[in-house]
Image (tube, rainbow, N blue to C red; front, side, top):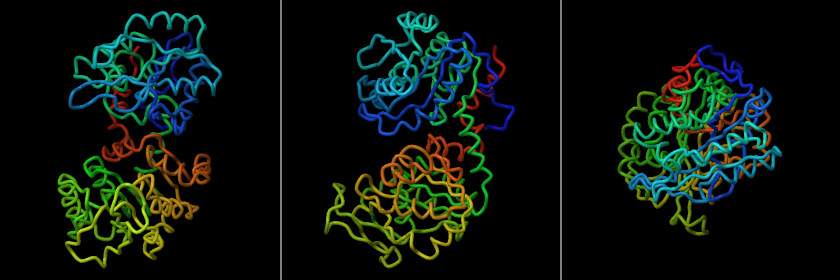
Amino acid sequence: MLQTNDIPVIQDADLRGKIVLVRVDHNVVKKGIIHDPYRIDATIGTLYHINAKGGKIILMTHVGRPKDKKSGNIDISFESSIQPIVDYLQSKLHITIKVPEFYQHEKKGYIGIETSVNHLIRELREDKIDAVYLPNTRWFQGEEGNAEEADRFAHQLAGLADIYVNDAFGSWQAHASTVGVAKYLPSYAGYLMQKELANLERIYSPQSPFIAVVAGSKFDTKIDSLYTLLKQSDYLILGGVIYNAYLCAKYGFKIKGISDEDMEHAKKFVKFASQYKGKLIELPYIVESDTLEGKINGKNRIHNIYKLPAGKELNYVLDVAAESFKEEGVLEVFHNAKTIFVNAVMGFTPHFNEGTIALDELIDSNREAIKLYGGGDTMQELKRLLPGLYIVALDSPKYYIFTGGGAVLKAIQEGTFKGLEPVKALIKNRGKK
């Protein structure tokens, strides 16, 4: 568990008879369906502790991105509802959970918390129900609103409870439900949050050699963490669109789908990487496809990047070929590693899977290394493509699967988990009565 005296932890909270507002990251619903309950299950220890110590639970999470950033409109629909999460918890834990209903302002979501929630809190105190689950936090204007709106919403949330617990490591953005509410209530880190922060230390102080594998669809969301990882790791491997942009910037290839913005980031990164010769491991075999519609016979082919002429124009590059992970130099790097961090899906899902499968199987072949997997798509694809390995990884002391890949990259970028805004809020407001 987390070894720090700076962060207030749930073990130190007096919960008996208290209403406990718990921010979780149960963002596992897509179009009304839960594809993997891992992030829900990971919070059950905290919920059990609160219940065992006499606390009464109000849960909240975000689901998806119902807010249109251009118009500011908020789409309240079943696709981003927490109801599938409630159904899952009720079925798994055999408890009764109720969800309050609020007035929906036309296209602007919920204005705020309304007094209609009070009768549910009364039922909670009287043990008529086991928990309350608030609607998707991003259905409320204040969650991602301006400073005034966010503070008002945070104050309303705090008014529901006696204690606030943050167990949502994956929700690292500074929103009302992750940061603002901590200003108004005694606040603590839940067990999952503590576990995630403790495992970050294995990235900050890794056993060497340390390999980082990072892929993504946009360079700008990964760029700062890539600079940090290139400096701190022994080896860095790229995949996805960011690897395509890197290849274009370094070798002059022209690949469909690479934006001007990604190219600018890639050019700067190539220049930066030239200071760290031998650290960035290039995967030589890539898969070109004539279409984004699937892996169609006759419309995709494998190239060796070192045999392509400068300026070569390619259609969509949608995967790293499995042959890349059979290269002697790549095998040697992975077999000798002591710590491996992976936040990567190598191919364009769901059809281009060979690169991801070959990567994960190669990582698993190193039985001694500590293997740290980022959450999100990395976790989902491991489960989809290699379900047996996924099950083993959940229980193996050599593996740890984070619940939030973006949060891990943000923590790497900051250089300390204390740089994450929700953690800062817990530390800043430590000791609040």
